[in-house]
Length: 196
Image (cartoon, rainbow, N blue to C red; front, side, top):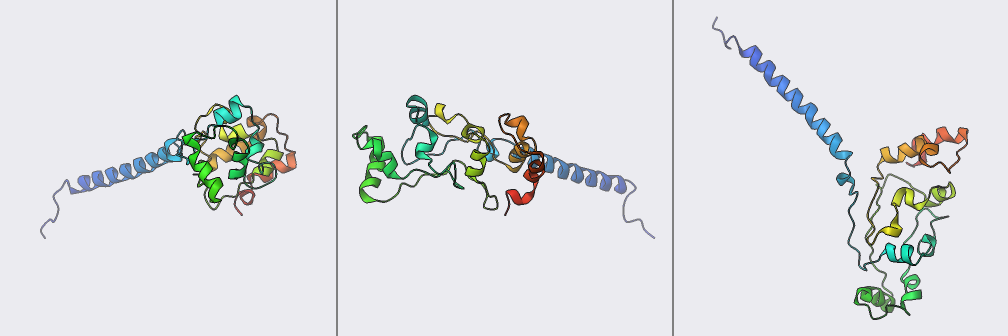
């Protein structure tokens, strides 16, 4: 019977399989590195807004409390974006001729809300309640960074599941002022806390 393959075929086939396995492993490793990187989660990037709102001016220079604009942050699931009327409480008197505020003034005149663009977006399968976190002693800067120094708000944390779990697993290490009773500590890692 005639030999179909030359004697080195087994070695060549083994080398092909080894190269394929290596390529597969490297692809998985590269994917994990990318998913854990800041750019993948848009960390550090700012999102264009209809009005160039500066937290550095409002929260920083003027010392406005976050709750003035984000009134639901202590009790509601979402911090909320202020209604145009909240902005116009001041801006009907100050900076009335500023062209940058034209969309705000148009919104107030027409009653059409401004279409703000989300900076911090969680997947639909995640439930995050601002009120619970604030009541537990988690400050705004923990997740949102020092917005009082940001002319444009940008994402400073990935807000990925692993980032959230770092805090849920060790809240005392990440937030020294927060006290979680030992019986509640184990519950913080229960999937249904955030996924329901």
